[in-house]
Image (tube, rainbow, N blue to C red; front, side, top):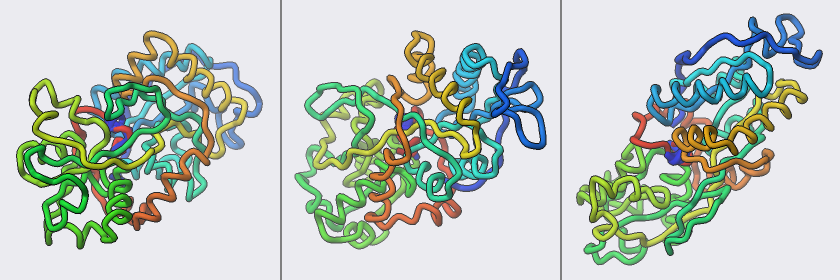
Length: 342
């Protein structure tokens, strides 16, 4: 989610344990027969609340506070009992939904790939964000883009100028900080980043702001981030937009979104989806989603929405399933990106 939420959108997937947060009680709901579990309490009852999971793309306190508000709004709108959990890793969230421990979850775009490949969940809502284009215009978009940054005084004007140089990606499971820029580098230079850049010249900054700062501070020659992470850094580094420049872009990249567990009752799914859409249009909802993931709205989607993400990962040679098991989740960055590892 770009954080990123934004970034969103992004953003590693190591398996881990769930950190429970924001649990609570609610008035026992009036649920339909379809909401009844075959061998236990009804979904949404006091004894079996709907479990809502958030990716660890922000600090736990931020997620807990805003997650509690979303939980309360969903309880009012649906008449169901809810429980919020903050996951310890992106992979843990996928595992949680695949094992049936999570009913509803906010997922980063690349995170949707193993979820869909394993048939564990279905995307139902996609984020809309006010995307700032390079010309300064702002549009409400279901997608975002990646940018390649260099220092303005470097003399580098295109990707070929980075050959043999040092470069910063965000992490291997970041859509805008690794997958899409890797694909662009391959297409435009004919080389894999591992051979295109200097030997041992690739670093993984762990966050989009960190990658941009690595260029600004002269620690690397170039970096990949979402557009435009530098806006988050101007307050502390007023000249960052004059001392760095964009030489290429990649995308569009699907935004992060909301998915339902595959066995979640269809009638309740429609209710939950509409409740989230309605809440996102209120002043309180706008504030909470903006604080969590830099979302400015949401729209209905289906699994096909993330086909470009899956295709880009394959073309870039990114084995999401393997990386999900092997790559540790970096520390949360100062703000969510569109993947939160977008």
